[in-house]
Length: 148
Image 1: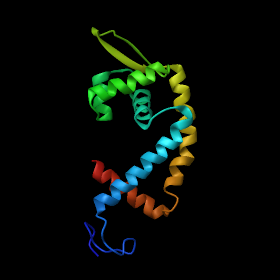
Image 2: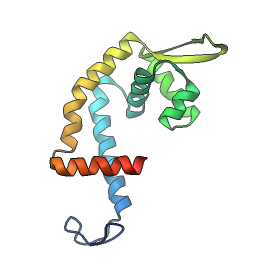
Image 3: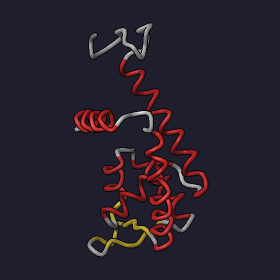
Image 4: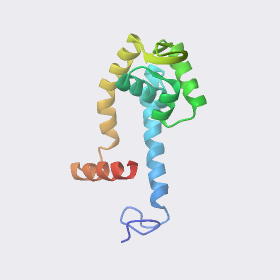
């Protein structure tokens, strides 16, 4: 059995789905699970990612946040605008450059992020319940290798 595209495997007897198609399908499922999970906080997955980056790395310029999130500057502005409207982040002048603005997590944003973090531990695990510990370790290793 080949390890790449379109081959027959026990999980896919017809061999019609490529590895990249299966990966995209799982990513789509995880995105939907995240959206459903985050709904009680009225937070999108993109907003959640931005909050996590800002919490981890501290105040930063929008351009830095765009780079960390790997999204366009315009999209970052939309994400930050939505978070700011909810009082989860705030913009303030950059003390090193009065023309620039920094974005940082507010106390309210930190408390919402903590609540999500506590609840997400069990939610994230449920997505991978069907995998054995060994399969989880292999998947984590493979995903890190693909990411890097």
